[in-house]
Image 1 (tube, rainbow, N blue to C red):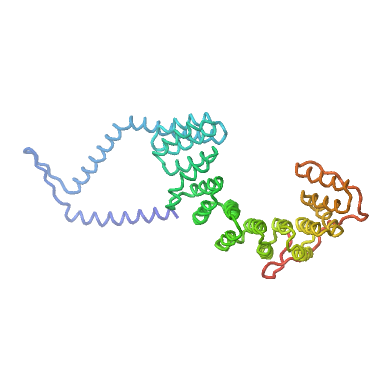
Image 2 (tube, helix red, strand yellow; image 1 turned 120 degrees about the vertical axis):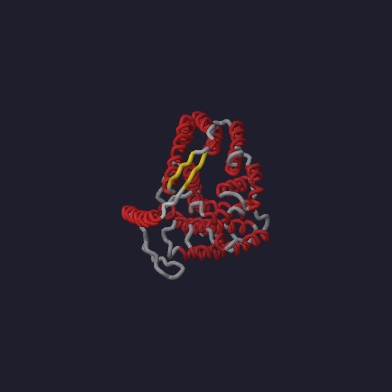
Length: 417
């Protein structure tokens, strides 16, 4: 395709040259130059050619004169770029002192001064020279002020001064002029300083920017919304805050879990149950199941009946079995709780299941086995090996996967993985 373009271009040039030649041949023009008694006569075509040759000669002469100076400039530029490259590689490899030295040398060339100073400040901070890092940032702020401000906020947050970092970025956040990295730092600093409301302001700009990966954005959004919900001082404030959140944020499992815990803490058990049940109808979540089973004794009979019905469709969900077992323990149904908890431990051991099973044996007045269950819960939390319980039951626990048809919210069967 490129060859055809050249051929077509050459044909066009030839056609234009042919027509121009015929046009000039009819009347080539006349140029007379009279200088100090000397007359020079020529055609217009000759004059144009002489001017072009003179321009080419002058250009070549100027280039020749500038070449030695340009060679020095090119050497300096190439050297600075090589030092910038070596400094960045050293920074990634963890040779921070060497990286800082190369980057400061690279900063002597104007075209790479800003990036080199920013990287040098990062290298100094990682090397433990926080004061020198801030001094380098002062120089970088003259070249790249916005990037230097974001990096300064990051260094302040790492140094345990999140409030100072949030204050530094607040003016640009108020005007909406923060870069994506600035919004991330503002959100992290606000969360670390306990200002969840300020962190919420970063969600929409980050979502619109599209510069944050979907998984990373979902994780940050969940942390921000969870912290925002946890900041509600009482039940009325919690209800108002929850109703004002966008629908998409109210559907986040982490947000629903945080709301349910806060609502239960403020005595709003029915509201917490309703949100969890609605969320579980959309998407099954072991985390929400665990919260559902641990919301206290209020309305526990209703929650127990609902959770027992879920076992029919999720018979091998360890979190559900543990939650139902814990609720049975609360209502002192030892015989019903024991097989559920034993099955949960056979599928996926957990600290909560061991603790609940210990409570069962306490209720059955078997303190020796109860103590072993509690020791197993502590060992599992520490990552240690648990002890097997003596054979209390005669039959084995069947932990084989049960084939259960699951359907989505539209009634379409889900394919098993």
